[in-house]
Length: 191
Image (cartoon, rainbow, N blue to C red; front, side, top):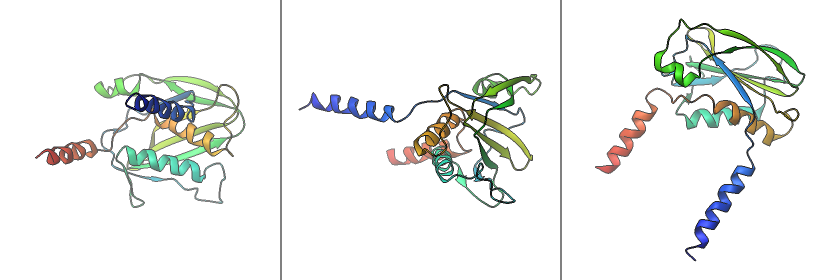
């Protein structure tokens, strides 16, 4: 019976991996971003007539789950970050930037590094997610994903969740104070 548990555990891990296929993702960021100082966020809503490329319940729920995991609190009243997304069903040429990996850059936070513009030819079915710093009134991070073998099917919940997970895996900043609170809570349990 003891030998059955490791095999069962491996089967569960394998089955969970089969449901998730990481997509190719590019991202860029602003050197003005205060990535370690954000605690709250909200989802951007189209101001005018409903734009179906900027509203999707599956994408919103996936973003909410990821932000909660990172310790951010959703707050519609003056959030630190406003998160917007757009689904592009047609192919497009997209301007991005070649920059140091964000985790490397955050160590020095050198704002004098040049932004090297880069053009991307994105396939049909591209998802773009942008983080805006509400106080600075600027985009501070954006990630975009498309598949190598075809488009993201925007009518398929699994495809959408995979795209959001793939993109937001590149944004790896805990909410300010979240990890300290988690450490204090676990330390208090040890007492």
